[in-house]
Image (cartoon, rainbow, N blue to C red; front, side):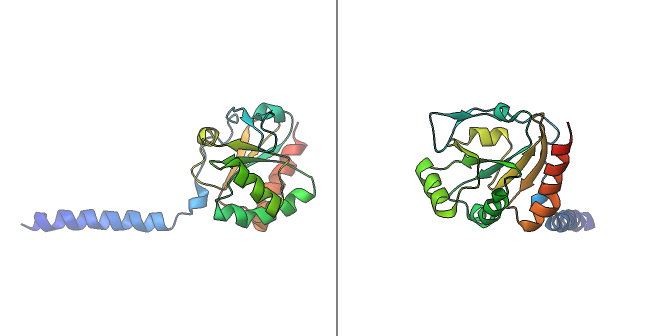
Length: 177
């Protein structure tokens, strides 16, 4: 008789413990299986010049960032101000991956808010994003000179993240041969 009450109570307590642990986790700390692995390969049309393409191979020998964004993304708009300011100093190669977006809407968004990207590419069907493990926008990846993914920032970047994580890592990777 007691067993009939104890088992559900124990199952309930186990679920409460797991829920408590889960609530303390930061969703931005989701590890990427791409870290320290070669950047996924793709060739996509450039947003502003669709007859031209871009591929990660075009960046071999350079440290670069891939920022995944969309005009429909509220958090992308939040980080866009910081990316635009950050890109002004020209100390990094910032590429944009416009994810599951209409090119016309994306170009209008960049015209209105400013364009921090050296090149923005169009991933209309989201297949390249899938290869990169994108499950939400914005996400930002840092890729080293050898084409290895070294960092993934899930969620919007802000001045603190730029100054304490992204810029120091870019400087370190630029010093490495």
